[in-house]
Image (cartoon, rainbow, N blue to C red; front, side):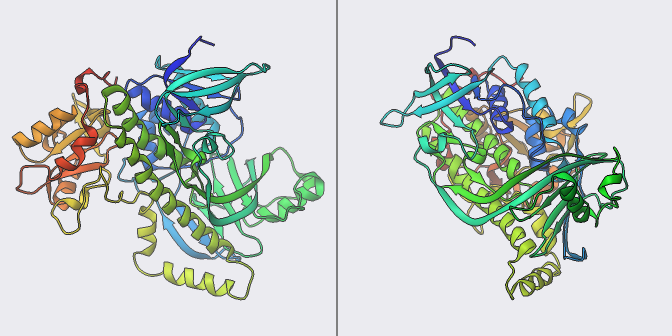
Length: 533
């Protein structure tokens, strides 16, 4: 290990969220040190689904092409009754607004290897494995530096680091949440499920999407992960065991709706149980995500049942939202109040995702009382209303609510775009066909459909933002049509590609610079920050 005692950012936990945060910070020129108690990757899959917004985040850290080779697009989600008849179908086959398949299946260890490899290529990042963090101590006024106390593998000696900021990516059982005085808010879902990962060459009946079996006595989830990889999840009694001959015979009964298997004694190598594990699915939200310069991300801040595949996605969204703001504060002297917007923006979205997952879980199980069948009938009826399933399918990235960095007022022209993501079409750049974000880079950006006015240019210059006319991008018209639907001549995009402000048609000026400029004003000129590679 290096003899480091002071570093800009310490990240506790080197799972996907922590490593992604480090890579995003590196893109903004901010060094970080990751502390991880394990020396090696956890070799078995946990998360298996990401959406198109997360694929865009992986693009921003430079691994999307390698990741694409390891993923399998999925058609969406079906709710089935106990007889495997379709109650509702949420189709997600098309390419989403972020430029990637809306649902992609993968193995988490594959993603983590790509992230770790990318981390090793970044001189701004350093990973210390075999390190157990034992405390995080903030000054009484909550300001920096923050002291992180740790022990190395096999040693009882405590050592110390001081950091300008600490990111707690240490999971549900980590200590960072306690360090900032946060407690869980219970969102009322807790069930014990068994997760079984299988490799088989036998024919499996699958629609290439996720099946959720809505049955109060035997709810289940099924999905295809790869060419010969499958996952089943069953809610089983604690005493029910799937090990040994009798347990495997029970497993054969459970998977029978999808795959035909002979009795266990006749199983060959064409059906291999890679692992089975018991998980308790919970719905919880930390009541606070920040104290001073210490932040919670991922499972340290929120826990969701897995029924809509948003657990890991939520953590990577946290990293994307926070890192550009933290970089602007640490490298360019922006106001610390900018960091308040992290929880303001992410907590509401996380709550929305958890409630949606709980609703799907509720539809799956519905309880075992006399009203269970009625509740599932109501769910089925609601999902048959025209447009309902389409709305739910696209609502995994709802617009951010109005706030300091989302300038939106009801009824005003151009405000419909504020808080939404800019779409990402393919564009032409230097004669090559590339994705939009590869042209815009990692900083602020102005996209305009009209010649830039003096006010637009001044706002862009103050933020170090690029200015691009949509007609110069050579896309398929997506961006011009998007601006026209939003009744805007131009938009100001944040580094996370959320619309911060817009220029309503014919006005020539961003409408709320006085509201957001104080938060983004920097003590040092933006040009002094290290550019993204």
